[in-house]
Amino acid sequence: MKASMAGNDCVVIPDDWQGYKLDLFCIPKHYEDDLEDIMIPSGLIDDRVERLARNICQDFGHADHLVALCVLKGGYKFFADLLDKIKQLNRNIEHSVPISIDFIRVKSYVDDQTSDEVQILGVDNLDNITGKNVLIVEDIVDTGKTMERLLKHLEQYKPKRVRVTSLLVKRTKGSTGYRPDYIGFEIPCRFVVGYALDYNEHFRDLGGVRGTRDREQDGGDSCHLI
Image (tube, rainbow, N blue to C red):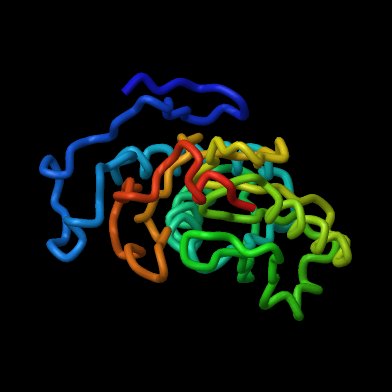
């Protein structure tokens, strides 16, 4: 794979990347017929998340407090791994930062389609972000519309500063141009699962990011996301 660093200093996976063959890795038998390839192995994700944690610690190193806000459900694995690495760094730097956590849920998907409306759930008690530095942790950004709406919604709580990290950013035709502050990987317009990303609540238990059969690129519904 000829990956590159571009945009917001992320790993860019090219459109012609075919992924790793499934038989090179251990795949649960009940998923074998549904998967096409392994786009990003678990080890590569782990290394990239470690670097994102370092970048975040450097940027927030002199903050008096940081609220880490996890976007459920798909963001929970990235959130947990990222926070673990931030905590490890926090124990070994001169200016450590107190961290609190909170959770929200943003709903826009129905099967592999997207709805016209975005529901933001679990935000009734976010007064704790007022005047605080906030880090939103998301699994994947498609067109950016969902995240833009979420950021606008959070403005009413008057946080001091808001930054967004997303494990994945998808190159999709309907993109608004929005880019998170910290990006793990920029990927082609394919429907992917694994590492807590799901299809109708399946595949969250897979390690790594996997390409699925029959739901990928070139005009498919998964390339026109919100």
